[in-house]
Length: 607
Image (cartoon, rainbow, N blue to C red; front, top):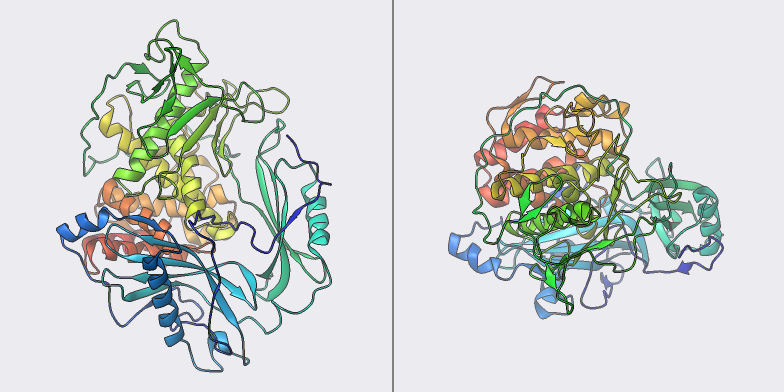
């Protein structure tokens, strides 16, 4: 159902942020002592990571195996989580700078944090993600993360803190939440299909000055017209003047306008570092793009089978959107004998078989390579809808994650076939992983990183599946199997080994000002990842990496950086720091892996 813009908004002081979590208990604010400012040593301008006096401790193989059994988010009301939060706050207070410097510049500035998530990883480390508030008001998209080693001691902290003038969070403002909503609705210019939110926040303007503001979110992800894209628009409206401080769409899609490249000459991938043993099962299901596979399904009461997998976490299920523009309902795809895609089967199931397989492989990739139990770390159910059309009934040349589920279009048969390939499935579902963890803002440098990490994980899913399925061909192209299927040139949406080949993307940070659109700027981190994995040279700088470390290690490093060390406003330079720290955790500060990561970022101009 569409919700008209004139309906009453949800006006909330605790509405969802750009990095939603799923806590087991209410998140009560944890305040600093009255009159004391919270800050951290090393969080001055240009600094992201501050290391405590006690370094992280490397674990033995047995310790890692033991810790892996307890990986995942902790309930915030559990004693272990409470202890981790308290140790983090004690550390942050003890490292606060003296008066007149950093956060406390200008006198008594009250600063608080709200625990968002406490997560324990496979190395035995515990990570406390904290949302920043100021004078009782949320600071938009600013977070701190405290990292505790296996002994429960704070090893390092991630995030940036800067001075916020007194009164910005508490002084009366001229506009109400409904006024900000009206301003945003005028900008949005259309109907919404989810209840809008308008939340009082502290936010930075384009010059970096903190202002009293409202964060308004307006969403339309269904009933899309032929030229319309899914939108989860975010508006920051000055709470006194009504000026629009910032706006961005937190939702993308796989299709972007760019010049078509010629026949592919991409670099062949190296031999995977850790081949996976094929899963047991009857490989008798036929896909559009991945050959024969073995799907996990569920037998129904009437004896037929449905595309519902109950063996992975909370489940993997694929539904039919019935060519509507709104993906809803639970219309199943069914098969009489559980042999999917064979001759004589309903042709509508073909794209569904690929979407289901893609979601299963993405779940397995997260578990086996990233060490994560689905998107939220707790087995979150993966839901996909295929046969989603445009509002006018025409085919949708797109695929997107809408914050809750996957939506796949059938393509138009010319520019694209059904957008259900392995790398597209992995790419879009990875947007959900980013949303549940770092919450990277889909704008500016953090937006380019958001897109890049989806490309990175999408490539990882294709690589992972190729180890189980000889019909899957891994390469460094994005979406090539579905994109322009009729021309036979093997062109793709993006090329990670040579980003500029699409005529749209950049591969070096020096060119970032020329291309700040998130799909185009994703080429910077995409190429860094490629160089870490395979080695080679960046086309723009001529610098490179002498030999790569292989896909398994590079995915673990970049995946850990995303989920553990990155925050909503992470920049390219901070992403470099995050991946270096991640490689240090996994392989040691003086390891070859750390050096390769450094060399790769240097090659793409990020220092």
